[in-house]
Image (tube, rainbow, N blue to C red; front, side, top):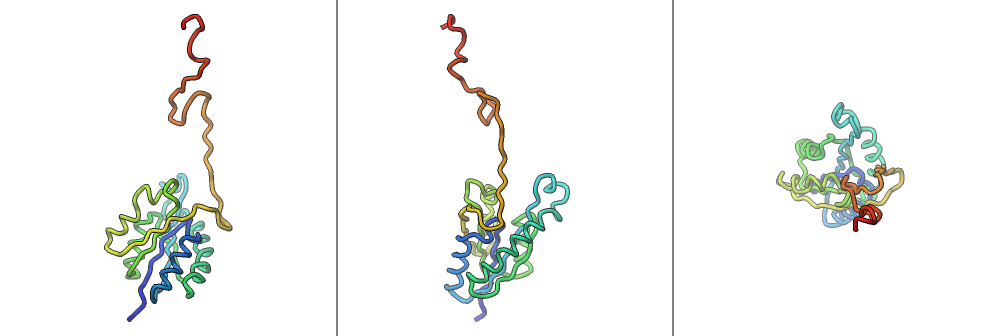
Length: 176
């Protein structure tokens, strides 16, 4: 019997501990060959202007960082490639090219994951291949940088732009 072909789909969590544990666990469950796809991740206007080109360098760096760690976890060489910027299209491309038997999808935690907001694991399940979802820890790994957006709000406004009452805004003292 030939080994099962496992497609691993991850981006920021490609070298994260929960994914490494999932790969090691699956490797122990039976003979398997692993292939990692890291979808490109264009940022800002590049998502509109040139999504096919932008973000491939960052994805390539994540791929190079993750492959040795995944290979160690699987106790065998893991292959990989940078995929399409649309993660579902990247999975479809890989399924078409490689004929995988199972898929492991690794996402950021639900509170920050764009993939979970669009329900990527369910969309991949609809392709007819068994899917295991692994939620990453969200912790920084070596070489990763997190970008934070800071929003400055005028005093008295919430993040939805609605004025909040303040005690000194109750009106003139004589109007009470």
